Image (cartoon, rainbow, N blue to C red; front, side, top):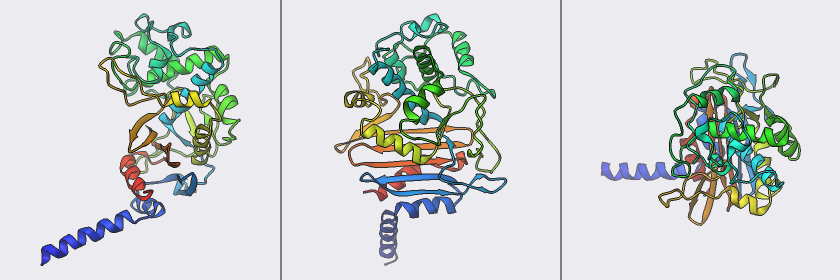
Length: 338
């Protein structure tokens, strides 16, 4: 009999879990100290959650607002990819161009890697992350580091290997072709046109007075202090990222043809598809396509999950990075949207 009641208890608990609303899931993470930040969730193209929990400055107890920008780390790669695609649409660049045509100080071993291979992480360019950690790190520092490497990690086009260095090269290409800084190009061609008024590329002279400050799970400061662009470097709000999401769905930034190409996964040398398009991890399952990305550096974690068929979007930004179990949270929220 006790076995029967135990089984009944498990079933009951399962029912309670799956019947939770997104708001209840979020509040549970906040109560347990696992989330401090901003959340926006849309279901069937309608926003159902748009809220903040906690503080932008934990030490001074300065409360978060929806207008508080968070460092979004690798979510920035999606913006870099869009900028490259815009240059291609203008006829100023081809995906098959070699990167060395636009970045003079690339090492000789990188002379045959293409723009497309940089976009989808099949270039073989070694990743600098976890190798270079100094405060104020710049794109030029990364290029100098690449010059001192033995060569590529593998023959271009044969494997997928995530490389922040590759997206730094793409940032330099954007600057070379446009004659603008990476920050200026994104502001003029993406942020302003979408009225992303709380989104900024962080540069050495940038002051974002109301930004979130990064902390670890022990509430010790762990803020963002490097200056690379292309792979990261952007502060944004959840509401601004949702504007970006809508613009991509409605082909406001790119043509319909280019937008489809954005999500196209390359075929590797062994005949298999990679898992990454251009600025997005891509998953096709159950008749739908998911474009998603996460980001994490210092005291920040970010999540951008997009169901392209059903109009579902999950955006989560936190400034208490390692307290937040990103993928557990994502799976729990996804269950509430079924």
